[in-house]
Image (cartoon, rainbow, N blue to C red; front, side):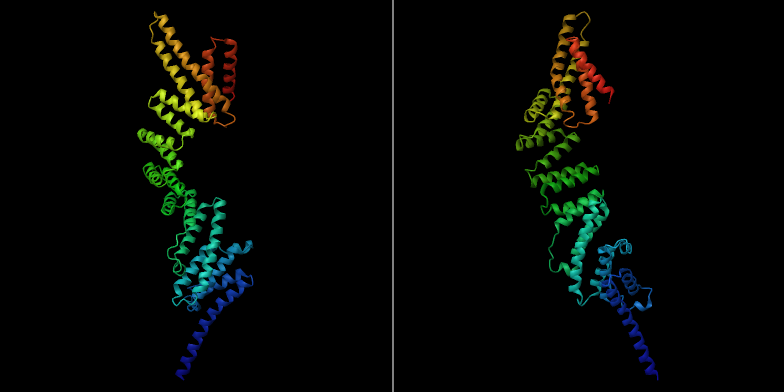
Length: 405
């Protein structure tokens, strides 16, 4: 009698186990029939540790594979009611497939899992691109990172152990950068820079991420590293020069400016930057020469006209201070010194008038516009004694423009 009882107990336990595995089959059938809500409800019972009947289905790899299938189907569904079943279905799908791989010690489900993980990668890519385009950069980053995570799963890595998915790594960097996660951005950009991906542009992005963290030391270090590898990349060179100028490292700035001009003598920006540096060093004649060279290359280069006009105007103001120091009884000397002011202002005028011509076509900002109008107003005022009819009208025009800003 005892043997019969034991046998019946074993049969009963075995039946419960098969019943739970049967739920996995039922969940698959429900998914295939389009009943994703019922399929999800069924598969969750099969993986619920609080469900005493799930002790056979929880350690079964097929259970987790089917769970991954269902969550992936929820993501792919166009039915909004089904989409609401899970907040982050692809994350759940990935967790499920990873669990299935972990449990599948004999490799019985390896082929089907490889196929499903490959399709999951495509879904994650689609989600990442959509999220990025919708400016949900955190979700885009998560999705790209999950794609990279799949590459590291053993059953996929075995066939391609040396795979470096530079496109996805770079895109993860872009998403991190836009999500303002600059540490991750630097990590991913640095990873692909080692393989030459996007050449100098990647080093520029690394430097930009460091700059946004107010770390110009590492920004410069990476730009220098990039420039050593890509010495013909003028964007790297320009960014290095910009940082040197911003950090007042004039010798380094001048050194790289000379390199830049040698590599690209037709670029007016380099001559303008050189002129600005000379200007700051008090090397007036060199500054004038560089500004004029920029204008020679590009007759519409606003910044050089503006800086050159400002230089001449300020020289006139300085000379005016010199004239005011002449003793009152030395009228002839005073007139001589005042005349020198006019020489500087005469040089400033055509450059500031050219700036005025270029304001609208180049959509110059209001602060710079005001500066142009103020300078011209001052210049026209000083010209009035020469020809009141002509210069007073121009003076009034600038006054009107300023009052309407």
